[in-house]
Image (cartoon, rainbow, N blue to C red; front, side, top):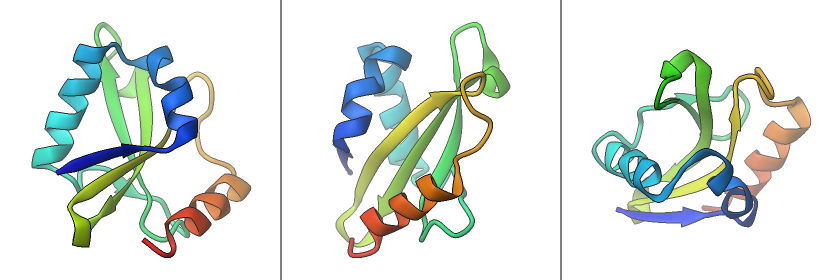
Length: 103
């Protein structure tokens, strides 16, 4: 499995994950690439609720990613804390759909 970070994800990753936590996320997705819920209208983009130390799943981070099944790749698109946003806007979902439509 290959992991790819969109530029926006790379810029914010350190806000949510240290190297060890991010490695744990990668290992989890390596075994369960379809773990996140597919976001309606996104073209297959998934949202994974990921608990951080001391916060649990509900209070942790939402990781938005796309599983490119034919290439065995996961594209990390963005992440956000639940207290920052509850859901993605329609415009954000539309933009992500455009990013992944040809993958």
